[in-house]
Amino acid sequence: DTGVSQNPRHKITKRGQNVTFRCDPISEHNRLYWYRQTLGQGPEFLTYFQNEAQLEKSRLLSDRFSAERPKGSFSTLEIQRTEQGDSAMYLCASSRSDTIYFGEGSWLTVV
Amino acid sequence: DQQVKQNSPSLSVQEGRISILNCDYTNSMFDYFLWYKKYPAEGPTFLISISSIKDKNEDGRFTVFLNKSAKHLSLHIVPSQPGDSAVYFCAATRSTGGGNKLTFGTGTQLKVEL
Image (tube, rainbow over all chains, first blue to last red):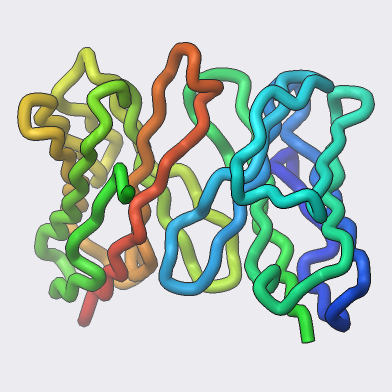
């Protein structure tokens, strides 16, 4: 399977702990995106990379969130000092042109 | 400010009939539109897209229509099948200068009944 791969698929963590999600995009896709989706809403843009450069960050991305794409391939999204409001599905996507392809998402539950 | 709106949260259609899902947008800078299908606990799956230079794009059972003057697009599924039951999201972007960042609607739950 050469689609966008995310792990872990599910994470349950206690409030205040740090979590990290990993995304492996489709090979040769130079753009990589992180989105967040909560129940009843469409995905909301968080940030995107072109190669290793982080070109845009949403105001939804507070100081507790950091994303990296060190070699322009895989990416990580870290959430520090998690809060219950961080519970959501975190979606990674990649593209080479106009069409953006999503991974299966990483569910985060903060208890 | 909801720039992409899907005003019907749900739609129920009989198998074999046509499903029509609607989407409206407010940002005139959007010039590329996509439809995604999503099953519970999975990521969105790309279905079909349309550029603003076209008013129709067809792919098998799926056709997307774009009315730029009305800032409206619709997805037609003919014939509808039970496996089409899912949440459908409309998304829009600026294809130049916007990094292809997608703005999504809130989705329409389609149920195709036997």
